[in-house]
Length: 294
Image (cartoon, rainbow, N blue to C red):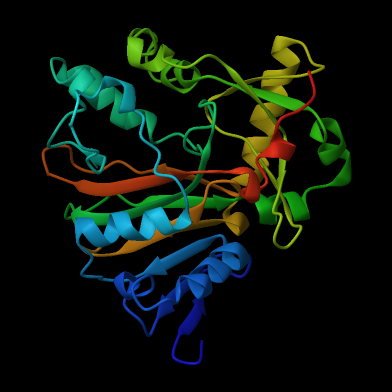
C-alpha cells in the first residue's frame, strides 16, 4: 500500500485515504487492501471522487450482500435502485405526505446504526454526496469501539453479555407518534442482539446500540431505557466523534458494527441528496455471535 496516503480523521478512529481512486480498488484487484483499512479504522473517507452508480454498486457488492429493504415490494423484473437520503425525492411509501417524509428525514438526526431492527443487520454504509446544501447537512460519526475501550468497567459490566432489543418504530416514535404508526416501520418484528459486537478480524469489541433500541434483557422498562441513554451519551462524547461537512463526490464508508451516525439539519428549502448503499453482515463478519441463546 505504498501508493496510499492514510491520514487519521481523529486520534481514536477513522482515516482519510488518498492515492488511488475509490472506484479503482475492485477492478484493480486491490479490494483486500481497502477491506483491511476498513477493519482497522472503522471509518474511511475519500474526498471528491468521481464514482458512478455502477462503481458504487460494484464496491458495495465486494463488501457483501446488498441490503434491499424493498425486495418484497418490487414488481417482477424491477431492478434494485440505489437508495437516496434526500429532500428532493420522497420515499415511495411516504410520497403522498411531505410532512411525514420531512419527519422521516429528521429521524436520521438521532444517533443510530442502520438496520439493527432487521433480521440481518448492516455491515457497512457506503455513502456519497450528489447534491449538497450551502450550509449545514453534516454527517456525524461516533466510534462505539473506541468508546467501549475507554468506558469504565462498572458501566460495561451493566450491559456486557445482555441482549438489546430493537424495533424500527422506536426511533420514529422519538420524532413523532404519527410517523411511528406508518406501516413501513412495522415491516419487521423486534430483534434482539448481543450488546457488544466482536470484530472477528482483530478481536476488538464495540457496543452495539442505536436509536432503534428500546429494551435490555434483565432490566425493567424504565431502568433499561435509562441505561441505554447513559450508554449512548457516553459513546457520543466529543472524543469519540467526527463530523464531516460534505463536498460533492465525497465518500464515507463506515463499519455499522462499531460506528453510530447521525445527520445534521440544513436549510430545508435547499436540495441535498446523498446516495447510500448498505451491505448486510454475514456469519464471517461475526453475526453468529450476536445471536444470543433463547
